[in-house]
Length: 314
Image (cartoon, rainbow, N blue to C red; front, side):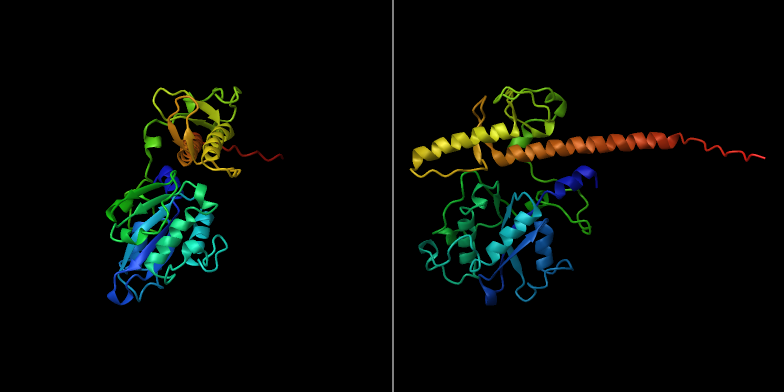
């Protein structure tokens, strides 16, 4: 495994929803956290040892969906806990009208309803989360669920497609192919080249960008937009604020942008993709520095200096 592959794998944090295929436990669910969904479902179904002891009695299991895009492991674990314990959560009221007649809170229909309510609850309503459906057999249970926010991407995949999502932990050995994290169209459309970005001027404040790690650009071909990270965030927030004021009378101050137009070419930008692209470029720079330092150490090792012993004075 290369260092770049390990860094990509360490960025994937997800929560998943299982439902039992045993007729005795129809619509029974399990919610968990993982960095490798494909390996995790094999553990739940007993194909792999270690872990998943709590779900032994209700096998086999089917993975219904995966939610990923969390900024850290802690954020994903917090999401998991709130999803697992809706009655103890302070994020939303279980006795409210929107959640009335939801039925058994531990069955599949209720778990799906709680999930889509969480998508519209702070702080996750503005997070760059992504919803990955692994089956469409349970979509009829979404009748009263609100649609996901517009900035959240929703995709449908199969269990075989899970190879491109996530990776293995350090002690996993069944996947040696080095699966890479899925790249969005924003990342694929333009090569990450730090040398082309050095010496840029921010299009928003007209100031020199001295720190490349805080520089963001547009992925559209031919677009020369360069900006500070905070300048672009303020620009997108101003566009979101103007659109929200025109649609509603209540004003709500937001700190985290979701999506907005590029200030130069006016093509839509997703904030999650902008930050993800910036992180990927900074990691490439760190890996390049690390490899060059190792190369220099290797060259020094090829020509060891001779140690001359000091003569004793008589």
